Image 1 (cartoon, protein in one colour):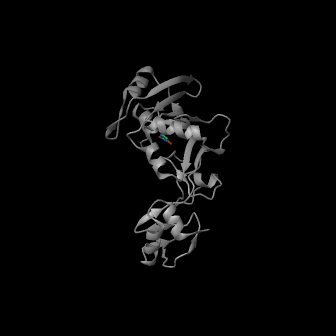
Image 2 (tube, rainbow, N blue to C red):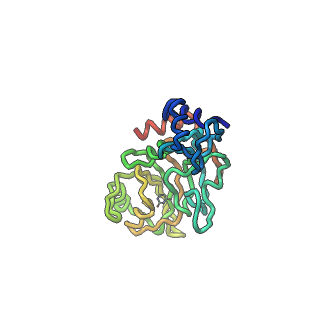
Image 3 (cartoon, rainbow, N blue to C red):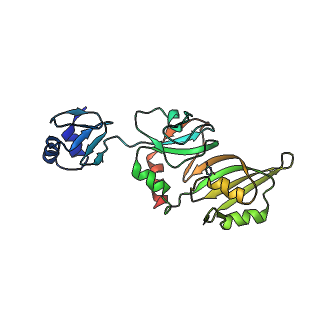
Length: 237
Ligand code: URA
């Protein structure tokens, strides 16, 4: 527990003196309640708002989760389905960076760092995402070429992609393939393969930038290492 004025000052918002003035003037709320009492003690994870600005004192955390199928990429779900946040034990208020569909597994990042989340999902940045897909039918070379050059889905054309490691299964009439994209539009991979009439039957994200699923089992999670965080930021910039 720390004194409210100290936390506000440490956040860099203003000096301790000014913080005290703001508190007395009723410009500060803690968990939605105006606090005018100087010296009120607060916790690091309390919601502190000063003149409409959120003061965050929570230590920043970055997790890599091997998301299983059957979890929703959100912090809560109105239909009561299990969420990816349920899988990570932490007292921090983390949320997923971008999303993987309910029926998609693989690499998913979670954080409480909004700037980092924005950096990773911004359309101006190009972190590679690699997916292993199982497709209905046999994906032909010409279809791969179309997808790699960029294909029209809805009202936009996808950026250049790479496809590799294509394997056909004659018995089940399916294709396994790896696709690497730099965008992250809603249902992007499924829509891309739909556009060439090969619906995705199974989807797994096997890499996000420098992060893969090596030595992880489904449902496992771990903190990112400082060098991994640095590399991701460099890739995005
Ligand atoms: N593209 C999709 O269609 N679904 C995902 O979960 C991820 C990428």
